[in-house]
Image 1: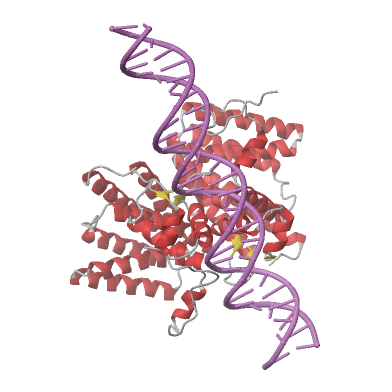
Image 2 (image 1 turned 45 degrees about the horizontal axis):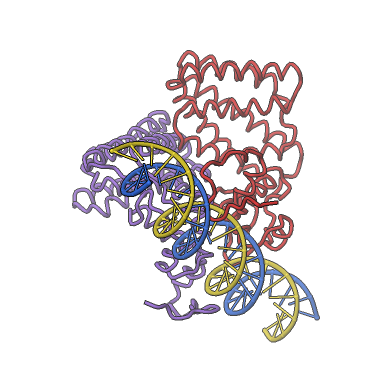
Length: 242
Length: 242
DNA sequence: TGATTTTTTGTATGTTGAATACAATTTACT
DNA sequence: AGTAAATTGTATTCAACATACAAAAAATCA
């Protein structure tokens, strides 16, 4: 059989390649490693304060040190890893005071976003938010925790996006990974379903009525509630990690 | 011309360079490279949108590609560099809309900090702020721009520190590099000396009286003023870079 | 049909991606 | 302490990918 060889220039069209695996191989090893490491840090598979031995992680991820180090440097810039000259890097420590700080910052970033969003949300974006709220309540009634959670996150993202400020979105993403880590720490800190739904409804109402101060205040309070919830659960679970 | 062969580790980084400089050499090449690159980006020596050719920068900084790449990855995570898979990374683009976004975010971060600071500043910290204000006014009267500028920055840092929230400080630093870049872009955007002094005085007064809302509002407005100043200067200077 | 433009194909070159090798430093052990 | 092992820091090497350029083929027009 004849081989239709395509040496030299790849075709301009990139037609039939839309399968998920493409993305991964195209992404670059340090990018993949970064994602996997973040996942491991967030879920607690890599405990706070734990030293990062490069060789070990290389073996675990099946890559060499170079891309791993690049990934570690990125995570360090994102505050998930702590770099120490000539020593092993460490997973960023995480205790109650960190969590307090984190949620203070996060709640206020979301407050800002809500304030802008109340002024800037388009009709379409508002409709989308209403849609998300309905879906979330449906999942709540159905008792589908995972789906509820996903939608909950989507709502926060939608509000952030509604501020129409990419820098704000970046900042939020920067904090969000750590917040997720906190949530994993305080496992099952979601007995607040009902209240959370109510709070979301109030926030949506404020956004619809373009009351930026109210929307901001409510959203900040909402985030702080989850923060204190996490803290309470953490204290209850007993010994915090260092 | 031709570079002399450097195999292994050509550079003896441990010559007797005095006692203070030891610290710096110990910092690691990627750290140093990161600092130098940031400086170059902020001051505009590396123009927005310019491609980063690794080999060139290596030659310029006198290091090999490995630490340079690590530095680039960190800067990318900080938003100063844009990574493109399998292509040359670029200095993050920077136009008027970016500046608008940036100062929106920055002013609100400082607002948050001021709100907390008004509640949390210790007597000693307040005294320090008063001190800084006096010094700044002295430099202003003496017409010493550089010194004025340094103190101005110190005041903002002191307010941030007064919020007693390291995460907030981190976020601020994250935005601040970009803000400095914007200021360098709009060169000489400081005809606002007199107003700026007055605004600072009002902010300090609000902090002393523990009026958190007022302090936050004033500081946010102050930052936004410098932002619009930068924008105006940029528009006046003519074509913005892409 | 012949000339010219456009499109496609082939090759070369430069740049990034990843792995390995080696030096230097820190840590563990005695 | 002093020495050995482990671990990080940096340089170099090789491979993969993308782009630029040049040549050839095809299509268009006089």
